[in-house]
Structure formats: structure tokens, C-alpha cells
Image (cartoon, rainbow, N blue to C red; front, side, top):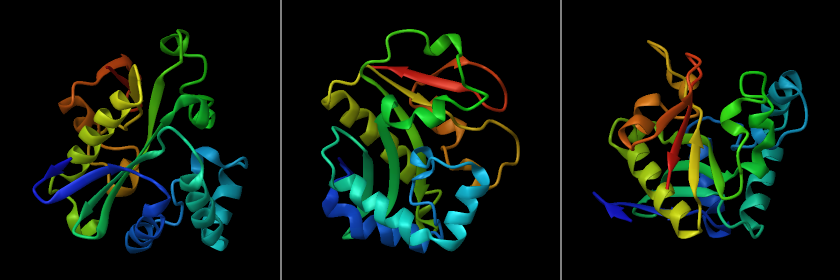
Length: 195
């Protein structure tokens, strides 16, 4: 998908170095590993502070594995400027086991072919230029291409959120793409797009 010189592609092992550089430029030590980390929040913070290279290594290894879809990457020229984690819900059970989302009725149906948006990251230099919208549009297209039936998102919805609080994507991003609220617990709604 090419829009305004921005290409959005499914992420593969060939994107590993460019994505690691994006995380470095954005000063994001997590490398999108939180939903895969087995420890508690304090252990996670310790790891991000003291061992961010481990997150980077796991992220690269994950891209090398044969997943039908891990996420999409946005490029301008040869530079990765955005990342959106989109993965089958079975791969991010930690997300669904959080107190806010555990055992919600909206998750009681057939979960096959359901994907979750795990995070959205845009290079600080390219923010407010529509990159997140392009990432989400590309993710929706890729999800359809692999036979996905729905996508779930977990943005925060509150006034005056700073960029660190928007790591799951801004609410308006999903609203513009037609996602509907399936559980409305402000400021933590659950949104879904049926494909």
C-alpha cells in the first residue's frame, strides 16, 4: 500500500533492523514485548530499564518465526517510520487476562480468526502526518488477506492524554476506520471491526 510516499507492508524478519532502529529513535525500550512478557509490571519496568537489548532480541526472533501476521511496518524511502502490532488473540493472552478485560461477555464468542492491535508506534519526526491511519488501513487489509474475521483494539479514551498513554493507539484512529465499541468502560473501551 503506497500513500503519500508511505509504504505499509506486513512485517517480516527483513524489517527487523529497521524496526529496531525505529524503537531506538523513538526511545521505546519495550520493542513491543509487553504482551509476551511473563513477569509482573515491576519486573517489566526493570527489564526495560536494565535489559532493553533482551526485548530487541525477542522482537527480532518473533519476526523470524512463521506467524501468519505479527504486524505491519510503514516506510518512507528505506526508513521505518511506524509499526502496528496486529496478531492473533491467542498470541497476546496477557492482554485479555488484564483485570479490565478478563471474562468480558464480548469475548465469549468464537475467537478464531480474531486479531488484536497490540500497540501503535510512529517515529516522533513523522507524527501528526497520517502515518498511524495508514498503518491501521494496511493492517486491516493484511488481516483480510490472511482470512481474519475481526480486529479488536484497546485504545484509551480520555481528555489530554500524552503520547506515552497512546501506545495502544488513539481512540479516534479506530473510530475513523469504522471500529465499534463492544464494551464501553471509559477510559478503557474495547473496540471491534468486523471484516
